[in-house]
Each structure stands twice: as C-alpha cells, then as structure tokens.
Amino acid sequence: MPEGHTLHRLARSHTKLFGKAPVEVSSPQGRFAAAARLLDGKILVRAQAHGKHLFHSYGPDQVVHVHLGLYGTFTEGPVPAETPPRGQVRMRLVGATHFTDLRGPAACELLTDGEVAAVRARLGPDPLRRDADPERAWTKVSRSRTPLAVRLMDQSVVAGVGNVYRAELLFRHGLDPMLPGRSLAREQWDAMWADLVALMRDGVRRGRIDTVRPEHDPKVTGRPPRQDRHGGEVYVYRRAGQPCLVCGTPVLTTELAGRNLYWCPTCQPAA
Image (cartoon, rainbow, N blue to C red; front, side, top):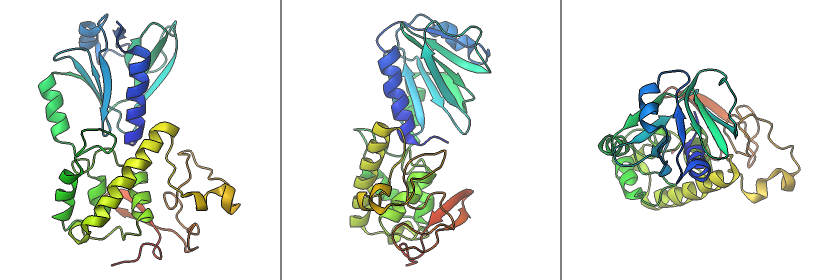
C-alpha cells in the first residue's frame, strides 16, 4: 500500500496537470459513472492529501475521495488519451495536456464537504500537512500500553505512516518496536516527529523512501546499492537476515498485528 508521501506527490501532480481548469471526467468501468457525469466539464479547484487519502475538490460539496488501498494505481500520459481505456479504469480525468486513469482503488467516491470532514476527523495528524498537530498523536501514544510499532501504523494516530517509515523511524531512534507507547519519553517523541517530517518531505521530493544517513550510503561504505522494487536506501525494511548496516547483526523479522516487522536486536535493544 502506498505510504503518505506518494499521495502528496499525486496531489501535487494532479493540481499541476489538471487544476484550475475544466476537466473531462468519466468512468469507463462504470462503477463511478453517476458521479463522473456530475463532475464532467467542471473545474478541478485543487487536489490535496491527508495521510493515505486523496481528495479532488470541484467546489462546495463535490469532492472525490480516493483511497488506493493495496492495488490502486494512477497512470497518466499526454493527450489525446488512449481509446479505448486499457483495463478496469474506475475514473479517467482528461485535461488540456494530460490524462490520468485510476484503476483498482479501495475507494473512489463523491463526498460532501461534511463527509470529507468526517473522513479526516478519523485520521491522525499528517506529518506532511501544515495543519498537523503532533500533540494529538503524542496524547494517544503516551497513554497506550500498545507497542510503539503498532501505534505508529495506526492511521488514527499518525496518518500516512506505513510499514517502511515505521520500521526505519524506530531504527533511526534506536527504539525497541515492542516498547509500550506510554514508556516513550516526550523528548524521544519530539525527535521522532521532527525526523518523520524530514524523511517524508524527502520522500515527496525524491519519489522514494531513503532513510540511510550519509555515512551509511553505498557511495561512502562501498557496499552495493539496494536492489528492491520499493527503491530507496533503508536500514532494516525487507532486509531480514542481512547484516545491519551499522553493527552487522542480522536483521530480524516477525509478524505484528498482521504486518511484517523488521528491526535490529542490537541497535534496538529490548527495554
């Protein structure tokens, strides 16, 4: 599932390519057809993201909410758009110079402003948004007996953090993934939040997740660059059994709350 930086990149791209101008909206697959007819020919005012949710606003009470889920993707190209669309295209946008096709989302629906507010109210602060309030997340973390690794993946606590940012953030701060949230010191949380903001902003710029500090970069250490479909240089994510880039201890993995967890037992000792 795409992490938050990907949705913010999409919001920027869609605003640039389609914003402030009328767009053609259609649903070749048919599952979004009624809403598409209401929006066709209208001006896309703006696109924005909150966590893993994307919102296309066409004016008061006309907002398209998209959640990509595990399989959703946007593909784009220059106009004229391909005819007919390939695959099961839930929603197609056609602007003056480009088109984009949405396939396989978990959600693609037309919402009112009130319904959008309700969706966002269920989400925690998004480190990539200017209106993010880390105090809200800290309150939930600091009162919880739940392992920190679980709380970081809870979208009602912090919106946009997925498995990669979770694993890498805990490693960078030397924290045991099983540490109860209430055992985390406030200064540790403040440092983690600042680091998360910086890492995710870098992800928006680069289009991939890089978490390795300069001194551990392949160009410095001489090790081969990471070969993985997810891209980016990381410390522990999907490196189970490989030596830790800092201490050499084999990286461990286990399943936690239905997701794979990665950590270094030496750099992230149990409390």
